[in-house]
Length: 366
Image 1 (cartoon, helix red, strand yellow):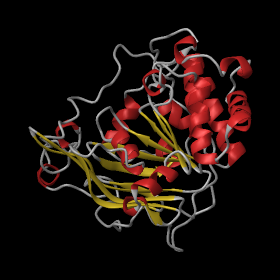
Image 2 (cartoon, helix red, strand yellow):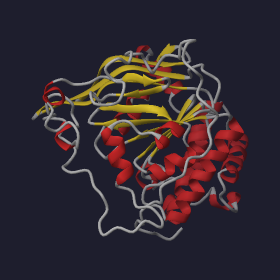
Image 3 (cartoon, rainbow, N blue to C red):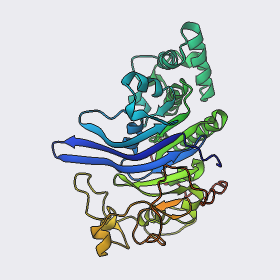
């Protein structure tokens, strides 16, 4: 990945929710960029703000109670937050597609899958009638659904979970987007079907020069498909770098804890290592570093308890937000949403890192 142009730049994004219990800062000052044809992975535990970040990019935050309180979302240089509703609808689904987490709740159960794909085609490609239906069948074939001419007239409940997810991908591709946002696209799928869906997304990315923003909590998936990884914790980015650096040298204690908690093939242990405690409630974030109550290094350090660290570029192309991270004190506070300066060495070509073995999960028939 040698192209340092930015397709998407997220700058100081803050998304808040006004609730009866108080203000929820779901996303609080997030900065990153996604380059053309790049797979950017956003990683973290449930509730850290990953999906809210994606919904903010597409302006799908319900208002009220939600509000994008600050920041910019630049797509090909245009700030999406300044577009009118009609212009944003052209971008959403047209230039930016999204695969939602649960296809059964995202697909309309009373319409055939073909009708729903054709609807997206007619909206973004200005085709109608037989031409739209023909393209819908082609899209079903491209996403690996057998007998697409038959499946196009079936309803979501007639398809397996893996096939429904493929239909969601076909809908997301109907508008020929440049960026595809995939929010936990393999959740609740059989592990063999998960691999097929990931392989499909990779193939589509290469074949169409797509940029992909992958939201996941699975580091095995990240190792397989990502170019760049941002680790998110309690509404902020804790670490950001390319996938090789992250797997070779994770710097933030939270990232290190995630790696330690993953079972590995051939490793014998009585118990898996865990990160103690729970993710803090966004209504009551701790003072200082949000991770310090769970941190093996900073839980008793006065500075970690009192002052919140910001992302700093602790090594060329490697950002972290930790007072105790090596090199943090003298590191510059550069903006990861901006291209690197001429003094920063380019990211080396990506070799697939060694993926941790995924934990066994629930299975369902494909």
